[in-house]
Image 1 (cartoon, rainbow, N blue to C red):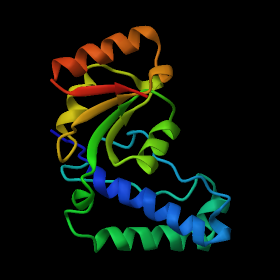
Image 2: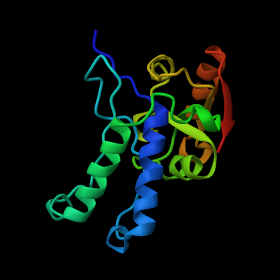
Image 3: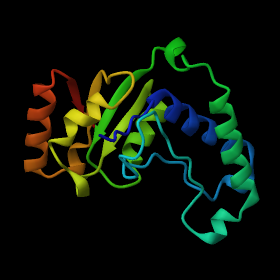
Image 4: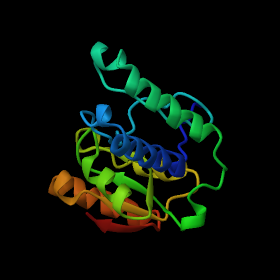
Length: 172
């Protein structure tokens, strides 16, 4: 059976590092730094993350943003396995919202929260919540629900499943 695992503190570190570089380099200001929902898996049996530099050939050929991405990847490869622990970062899963998870990105940048899997409204599947929890390393402490990013029926199903997994949850 194939699985996709994520290590939230590395994803958090990547977003924070990209934001720092964006503040330091004017050429990166035209890019949005965002989380994306889980959509490339399951593919592998070990932790995985994607660092992307846009969705067009023009963006892929922008050496400044490619160098920024390479710098972030290099930093993550050299990072201690305990990054995030020194700041008591809380691991979460996200449910609801759009593909680029803008609400969850803002939370990551403003709170000590690192996201594992994120499930958008368009791909809501209550059975996947258990897998989101079990395939996030370390296990999430909380589920954040983009309350306006789900319809009423999806919210009910999400809350019921999260509570069934004995996981704390919060509206965002």
